[in-house]
Amino acid sequence: MNGTRAALRELDEIDRAARSASNVDVVIALPFTLLDAGSRRMTAVQIASQDVHVEPGGAHTGCISAPMASDAGAVFTLVGHSETRARGDTSATVAHKLRAATKAGMTPILCVGADLNGQAPYEAFRRLRDEIAPVAETNGQMWVAYEPESAIGADSAADSDQIATVHARLREHLGPSARLLYGGSVNADNIAQILSLPNVDGVLVGRASMQASTFAPMITFADQSARRA
Image (cartoon, rainbow, N blue to C red; front, side, top):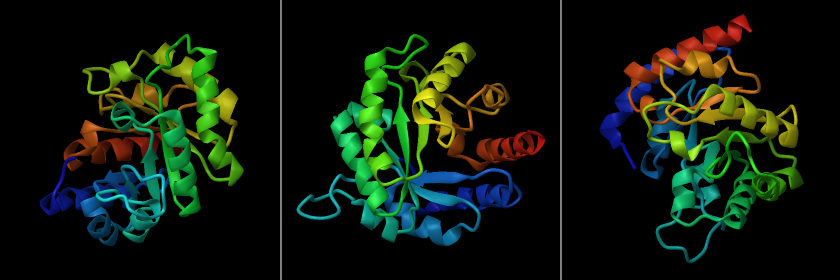
């Protein structure tokens, strides 16, 4: 819940960095009020919604459906972010939102991890399979971001061994085609270590993405890292 039209100026420099980064995909998840303006402004950055409703329309005052977000310019959407789960999203709700997003032609970025850790319990991955079933039904592309609760808004990212362990389990359950991202206190100081880990295809950046001065260099580094891979 950050950003007014004045903040769109930050996107210009981010877009310039993205135009020079041909080896990576750059997606910015904007608040609903900026989806249209942001999508019209960008040439290389793709736009995501931060959430969508489970229904395509109807009597849901104050909510935004996947078709509405898509119509405003979003081609991705976050689903199941830790903050929306904290506000009441259950695994069943997340599954419905994934289905709604894929039906609207959007690529969902599924956020998981509130109860996953280095010794991730079978039950947590069973719930994950339940959530992703709607995407499997539609043969949709799946992006999954592991965001351990302990690292969200913290001073440091999760331990490298924990990230590697959980991403290995995610790869086992989701297969080689899934894009696996790590999210949780990612910044310019730790992005190199995170991207060097096995089964980490990218990062979900929070605070450091709100200003071009901190986010644009991360885009450039990720592009150079991908080029060397």
